[in-house]
Length: 465
Image (cartoon, rainbow, N blue to C red):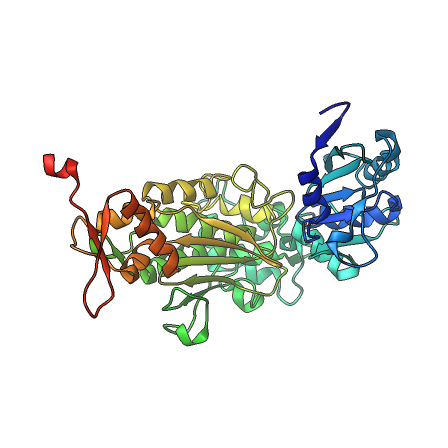
C-alpha cells in the first residue's frame, strides 16, 4: 500500500471489472451522485451488509466485459462520498474503505458496508433494503417489520386486547411460578412490576410466559411443529412418516416438551456405521440449547410456528425472523443480542431455567457435537427465518470412515460408502476410493457380472507385523 492506495495487477482488475452484482456486491461509477449512492448504502446496511466498488462504469449494454474504470483522480476527489457516509450514520461503525489502483488508471474506492444495528436511511430520508442485485425502497409496515428484524422494537411488548389481566394473573402457570419467588407477592402486582401489564392489558411476553395455553391466544406463532421425513432429500409431503406433531404450552414447558419429543423420534433412527447399523447417539444438550435459542429469540410478530424437521441424515430447526441487531451468521457464536429481552430475563427466574448459562447456548451446542465427533451445526439466514442444521455425520474424513469399515468387512461398495460418509455423488465417492488406491491402501475387486467393489491391499508394514 502506498499513500493509502493498494495497487492491483491487471488480472485482479479483470476480476473486478467482471464481478457479478448481487445481494452482497454493487458497482458504481465515480460519477454517481452521493444521494443516489446513499440508496445502496442504506440497502446494504439494512440487510446483511456488502461491498460497493465506486469507480467502475457500466458499458452501453449489460455485458460485464464492456465495463471500464471510471474512478477518482485522487483520494480527495472521493470526499463527497465520505460526507454522505457520515451523514447517514453519524455515529460511525458503518463502513471500512480502501482505494485500489491498477497501473496508472484512476482510483477505485472499495466500500465495505456492515449490517447496521439501527435503521439507515438515504440522504432523502427514505429506507432501502438489498434484495438480490437491487435496492428496494420500503415504507410503512415494512419498516416496522425491519425494526422487529433488527431488534429495535420487540413484539413481546405488544398489547393483547382480547383477553383480561385476570386470565394471566389467575393461571396455574404463574401461581406455581410465584411459589418459588422471594418475597412472595400477588400475581397481578408482580406482573405490573415486571412491566408485563401495559395500559391495564397483558403483553405478548406475559402470555407466552404465564398463560396456560398461549397458542389459543397467539395462534400460529407460539407453538413448535415436529415433522419426520423418511428421506435424506428435501422435505416433501410424500416422505412424511406421520402427521406433524404440534407441541404447545407456555414457553418453559414448550422447550422441555419439544426437546423430549424430538429426542424420542431421533432415537428411532438407525444409521450405517463402520460397525454396522447403530441407533443415533445424539447430544441432547445441543438440541436443547439450539431449541431454547429458537424459542427465546424468534420474531413473534411473524405468524409461523417454529419447525423442527427430522430427516434420516439430519435435523433442521427453523425459527421465524432474521438475525436481530448486529448479529450475523459469522459472529453469532461470539456476540449476543436479545430480540425478546423480557422473555430471556424472566424465563431465567424459573426453577431449572432452560437458559442457565445466558449467552453460552450455541457454544454449548457446538462443543457437544464435537465431543461426539459429529459435524458442527450449520447456521443459515433465510429471507424471513434462521435455519440451524445438525447432521448425523462424523467429523472423520471419508477415507478414515472407509478404512474403519474395512476393519470388520472384506469389501465395500460405492453405495455403502456413500451411506457411511454422507457423500451424495457416486463420482465424488469414487474419487475417495481412487485416492486410497493411489496411496496403496485399496485395490479394486472385479466380480464377473457384478459391479466391482473395493478391498484392502496387503501392505508391507502389515506383512512385517
